[in-house]
Image 1 (tube, rainbow, N blue to C red):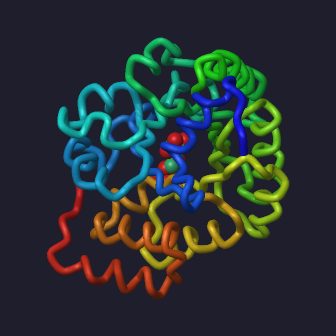
Image 2 (cartoon, protein in one colour):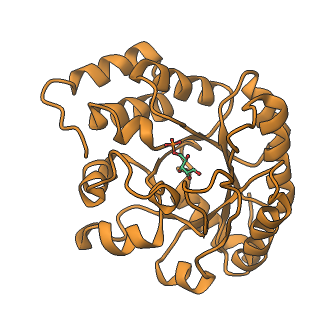
Length: 274
Ligand code: R5P
């Protein structure tokens, strides 16, 4: 495809985030403390990042973590998907009250390859969070920076095709370049509904290696370009084995059983993250 000069910056950064050779990505989500503070597996965030960075394609994280928790020699080694929305905390039941927390200038200064904004469709702050997204897209696009939209789910929201499909389609219509959402039944219908916008799948709460690997497998089978898992990797007893197994599924089309074999290879002596 021939690109006009207007979208070269976007395409260049998209190619850093999603491998253009196979159109797949293993993104590692380590942005959780922005609203939940100390998080199991991220208490020593520098160690978590240095342990897992070699095995991810892109790191989704926060300004504070980029400043404080990426070793100097690792800066620039992997593209950063910088979370730029926040302002909430777990101390309030209503998590949807987010605003933009990082300026575009800061994102550029930090060499972000993309910026991430959450939307809370169906929440009391629906409009505010959609306008967070559209405002950031208006600005980021003018600098050639892709925006990833996260379809955050409130405590009482069903994670089904109807809801996630609605939220994802709204994100695409807003102009998001990548959509991050949750896996659900008939997931291929969601992927088709927002095609050609790439979809990555969040892992959610820690489950178990077979369940998390099955979710990764089902996601890419349904057409997702990959995963943006956090807790199912860094809270596992064998985080390196887990991310290697996910890579095998996402980039090498391994089955869940084959990926479990890879996971088990790394289990003896595995170092758990704090
Ligand atoms: C949620 O909004 C956060 O941005 C996390 O990055 C996201 O939930 C993915 O992490 P996990 O796989 O732990 O759910």
